[in-house]
Length: 368
Image 1 (tube, one colour):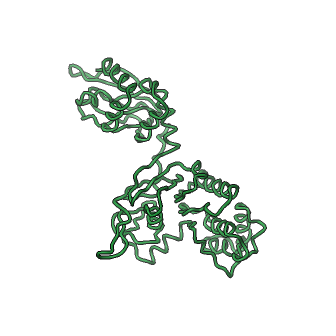
Image 2: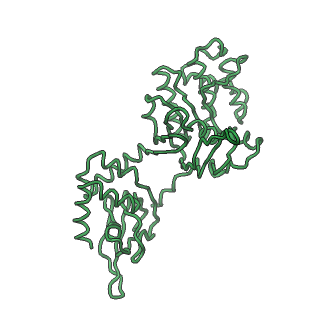
Image 3: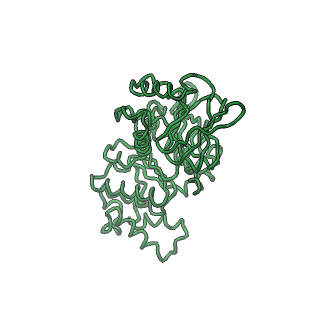
């Protein structure tokens, strides 16, 4: 059994600032933001108008130049790219913006074909591929219509078809369902989910449309140019399911479990790897999600095995509660996935959640 590979990072934003205007009129739109998005994730960005959502989206899409900080797309740095290089980066992205940017003199089919013509698709297949994509957004009978003969919602669907037709690795969308009715919006959301699940497409959506929240893996909220929260919806549900198997969390309410789960980080370890070592300074609390570990202690110059831990078991709390070095070594028996909680968040959880504090007190007595 081999260790599952870590998830591929699609977008890495580090220390990102952005300014509009100059001199006394200069205004800071983004403030030292950090964000990591993995391949295949659908991230919805929310927040009031003017909070910086669209600015961040256009910077990630290489539609603006990075002024301060870093943005990497699949490892490629955007900061410092010249205009020609920015255009080249954009060729691999799919954009869905409120301004449809359709060419009025072309039919819906021809507008979608423009995107296909940038690929290696055989010329003879252009119309077939374009028509299939238009049909998937409910416009099979509008392929020969020009934008002026389509409603606002239909024009939006043509723009969506054009953005999705080449199955890009990254799709950036600004209010993609704002002009769509319930059924059309649901259809578009289904297409995005399919691309994420089956093609590893990463999707970032700026929206105020609560109807599409259910498609998200994460919800990022921005206020006044700051990312103020990043809720990992589906991962949080998975972590909560693991925590429910752990005795120290059994008395917690769903809201308390969710609060802790949102602060935990997934970590992977290979067989034979040491997760914590006797004498090290304790900085994390761990819950095992998959795999098993051996617990050993050193006594009179010899190493002695004292326990085996598996899914739903936890370790690392003694050093954190006593503010002492680790009193045991934890080594993996096989590939292991754990969810870790920083010392700061662990101690805050103990202080905040009475049932957790009681369980930790009991465990401290038995394990110390």
